[in-house]
View 1 (cartoon, rainbow, N blue to C red):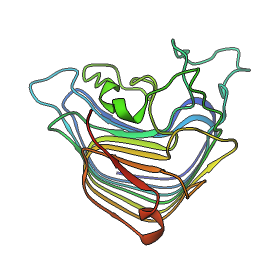
View 2 (cartoon, rainbow, N blue to C red):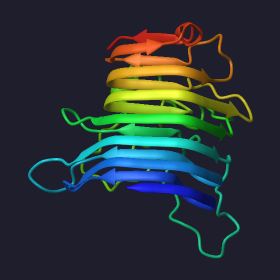
View 3 (tube, helix red, strand yellow):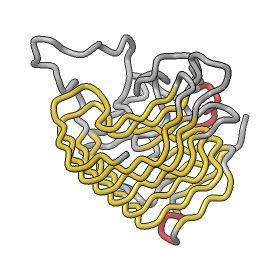
View 4 (cartoon, rainbow, N blue to C red):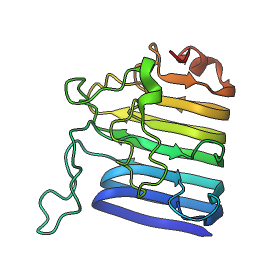
Length: 230
C-alpha cells in the first residue's frame, strides 16, 4: 500500500494511524510527502488484541518526508462539531509505536521527518517518572487511539514492544520547554538512529528501558540513558 502527497489540517486525531487490534495483518506500507498542520498527534502505530485467537501483525512500514505541527490546545476547538474529548488531564501526546508482549511491531523506518511540538508539559498536570515506566498501561483490549495509554513519559516518541526501528534524519522541535525526554524505548529490540536532531542535546533525551541492540551516532550517544526496572 502506498499513500502519498497528503495535506491534513485542523483535526484532533493522528496524522498517520496504523492499527491492527482484531487479528488483521498490516504490512508493506509506504507513506510519503505528507504535511499535517494543527493536528492532535503525528504518528500512531498500534498492534493490539481486542478479539480473535491470535494477535495480528504490523510490519515493514516506511514513513518518509513528513512534516507535522502539533499545537498545545485542541485543534478543532472552534468547530461546531468537535471530536471526542479526552476524559482526563494530560500533557501533549507524543507519537507512539506500540505492540503487545510477545507480539512486537516490526521493521518501521521513519525518514526525513520533522515534528513540531508545543512543549509546556507540567508535572502538576500528569507525570510518569522514568523509574515507573511499567506503570504505563498495556490496555491490550482497548479501542486504538493515541490517548489510550493516558499520560506518556516522552514528548516526541514512545515505543514499546517493537523490533527493528530505524530513524533517519528526524528532527523534533519544541515551541516551549518540556520536562520529558524526546524518546522512550521500552522493550524494543533493534534501534538505529542517525541524523536525529532534538532540542537540549546536552541532557538525557533518549531513554532505554529493557531494550537491546541500540545503535546511535556519536552525537546522539551522549544523550542516551539506560534505566533499570525498579
